[in-house]
Image (tube, rainbow, N blue to C red; front, side, top):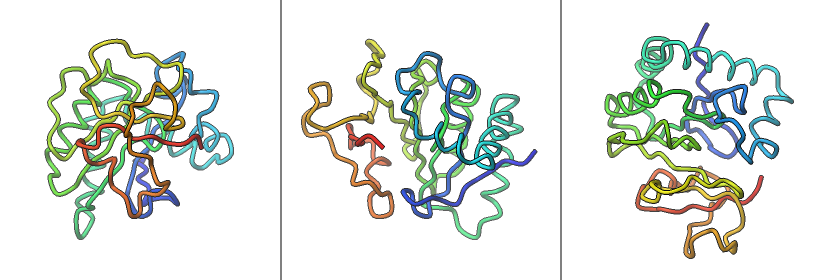
Length: 197
């Protein structure tokens, strides 16, 4: 079964990315308040080929991520003439295991010419990780989702309107396209707001 790497999409532009299945039957934590509004789940439901690719990636990520997921990704990387400047994990899906999270860190360290971005709702999978400078993991905050203490130091992504009381004042508002903006890849941009989509 091959690993499916996308060359980009309308929002990301030509940023390569790899996704996993979203939702409780995929790689997301159970009982999240966002699943009923999940754009990735809607895409998977409408596009069987996309759902199949994400499902196959998920199987590779869950079985033996170092061998079955990150080794094929390294081979994909080696096939490129130049390393991409940016790479995005999880346009859909989330970190399925600590072994996978360790693989993200190792992969970023092995490819220092690329800046990597991961969004997650799984702080349990990344607690205590020492991230290289070229890897940003942003914790996604949805209405009704409370992580509790211990995650305040992470870069954050907020789903909602910038005038909501729960969203920090001065949070950067996503312009809607990664083509000309790379703020998410900068850990110093601590809070980023995404309008519902």
